[in-house]
Image 1: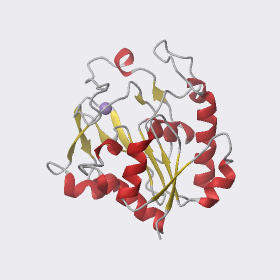
Image 2: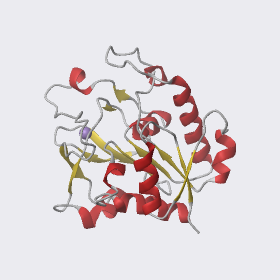
Image 3: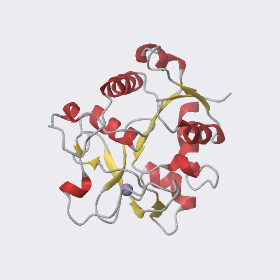
Length: 228
Ligand code: MN
C-alpha cells in the first residue's frame, strides 16, 4: 500500500505531485478552506510543505523588510497548524523552499528577510527559469540523513548542484535542528531534526527534477519513512 502524503497547496503543484507519485507515495492535496489540520493529519502518513510566498515576519517577531511584498497570512496559519499537528502525531515532514522556511519558523527559528540586502557578497539565489537551471552547489554534511540519501547522486563525496529560487534564507536555526547543507557563500540550504523519524527541509526545488531523477532519493527516503 502506498503511504498517503498530505501536500500543502501552492501555485505550481504538478511537479510536487508527480515527484511523490514516482517515489511510491499517494498524493493528497489539502483544501485549506475545508480541511482541519488536527483532523487531516490522522488521514495521512507524511506531510509535504511546498514553495510559495514569504512568511509574514510577524511570525518571527520582525518588521517587514521592503522586499517582502506578498504575504499570505491565512496560508501561514494553515501550514503552522499542520506542522504542529504532524509533529504531535510524529509524522514525517519534508519541507521544500518556503516549506523549509515554514518548518524553521514553526519550530522556533528566524529568517534572513532578503539575502541580497542583508548579506553582502552572496551568490545569486534567485534564478527563476528554467525551473531546473543549476544556480550553485551545496555542500552536504557527512553522516546527515540528507547525505546518506543523496550518496549515489553526489558528484563527489559531499557536493550537489541545485536550482535556486529564494530571496530569503534561514538566519537562526530552530532548536533541535542541524544545518546539513550550505551554499559556498554560507547560505543555509538544508536542515534536519536528528531526533525525529524524518523531519528535513531543503531550500532548493528537488521536485522540478522528477523527469531526470537527480533528487528522487530524497522523495524515496521521505516516502519510505512514511511507510513505517
Ligand atoms: Mn540557493
